[in-house]
Length: 248
Image (cartoon, rainbow, N blue to C red; front, top):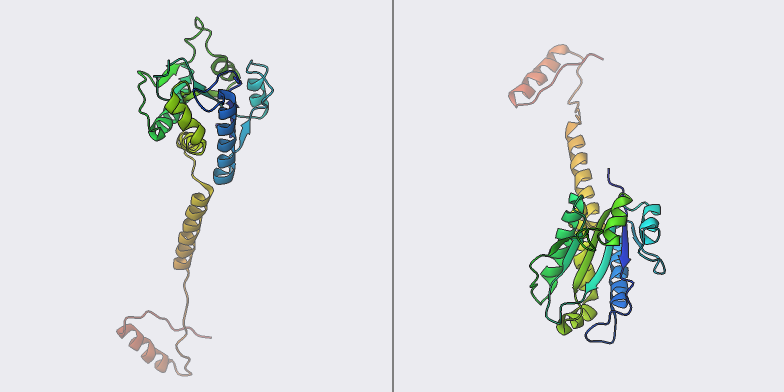
């Protein structure tokens, strides 16, 4: 059974400047990560841990912290560059030996691309995260997988595209909710309020079933002479009721 717990590892790249807004990848992705954590706690009551921001992304840094916290999902949250101001779209990097990694990446990329007003022009929204660096792979894919977690590294969108950079800066709440929606799809999670309402419906249905199993007996009369009791019983039968004579 999969252990509950998601580890969020936002970018550690303060020098990756956005095309507009005098801001950077680390600042924006930390803010998105914090919103994700708060939504998951408040609306889903699901354990989410944000990385200790001072830790590096080497195996003994954030991945090891995620393992210590008992997390089963390791989600690295980034925004992309290198698109020469023209590339658009969310991209998910996954571990090829984990179908769950690929599935989670699929859901996250779908939800992020769904809300962005600038249509993706990526040939691939899913990328094998172990093909990079001559097969060594990205550290935040390789290390969490080696430690038994489901890793995904998300490139939220391209921050070197001026319009998308502006969109990310101004829509972090919506972006965080898209992340949450993808996570909820993957884990088949329902909000706390919805679960409470379903529980109430089930309990009411169970109570009605139990109520239907009960028998309530009604005593119609008592007679000193048996023939009088038999006359009343016959009348009840004629009117469609069941009954019996009890001697006390």
